[in-house]
Image (cartoon, rainbow, N blue to C red):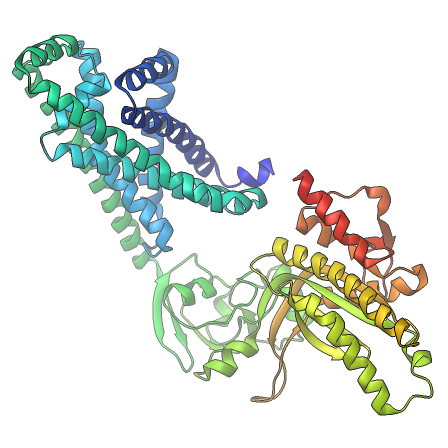
Length: 561
């Protein structure tokens, strides 16, 4: 987990570390301001306690170094971008980050700088009175929102892929709204009280003496420092923009021309893969695996300029060999053009959106459940076909609701069995849905067998295999007659696990990948390794004698969590 959280280059890790320092400082600062909602003594009491840490030389150095490094890395990141196109959340965070110094510089100069240079007592009351009757109070209130939203987006972008963060995000949203609201309420409450006191000439003199209020000359000097600091910031921002434009111009001078058969002709910078060039220029280009060289759906025929391309890498060569690619065929996600190219996209969306989009498929990591009825031939021996169909429909009517109730869908029925998939938002929720569905099927089967027993009919036994892995979902078949289905090794593994339940005399085998995806702790001694036909590596799985017993295990895991 630690490696996952701190992945990326040194600049990324340093931005995260410095961002955390600033976020912690901002959090306690905002909570401090919010205490003005209750009492002035609480407001000043927490500020004094906070400044024992924040005004210590070591921690002050950490804070200001983090502030400058974080800002410098942010500008460097913008200057080094190849394009300003980015997701909305990233763009919002960047814009907010650029707006923060516009207000923060004045705040720092009028507080910490004034305290250090002119011995101003920069208690919360001083800065609130300084801003209160003017638009400055609204600009500083805006600063609270800018800093907090910027920090929350950064924190979410860093932790969004961790399972524990996704679980607590709904609760953190309320807390994230509360903090700036609490701070703003504290500012308004304390500001009204202080301004009422400041209107009294006697109290005003006491406040001025208490805060060691700067003289007009000192204020002019402070405003001069603010203006100089803002000039430095604007120059740094201008340098960032010039660097970005300069790099873009240089890349244009070192660009490559690509012509798409039945498509546009584009000019893009060298160093990008052909797939990246297509995406950057809005050229439709199929790539189910996201450009990892696995699916081969970004295949192209190089009609002109192929002799200028380097030979395929090992990854590309293996993928092309797997599909029996002829000479001249390459993978767009692996090719980096350095000379003009003319290419033909093998799997190009052709305007028939419903067919073209759906038939291309989608790669997902999902849980799949393979279920089969045990001893079906012996059970139905001597029965009329109508009776067999009636029994099967009753059986499916009994167990399928347990699958659909947990977000699953039956991909296909196969005589006395079925294949179900759990297409949820991510692998973790899909695995958990599959486990709950398997337990629900177990309970449904017990109730169905009670009905059969009351009718004097033999009980039905089942076997189930539950596995999680990479699948491709898409329409497979002739146009307008292609049902949506799933393919992939995970289906084969689930089927083989179901077959193993017969010899073990258990109702269910759950693969270790499902347990890990669902975040369930399992004793390794409970798992068994299975050498499955058609599967190269052994598959660890948990045997469950009665599928309904899985419900108790899941509830115990929830209580522990």
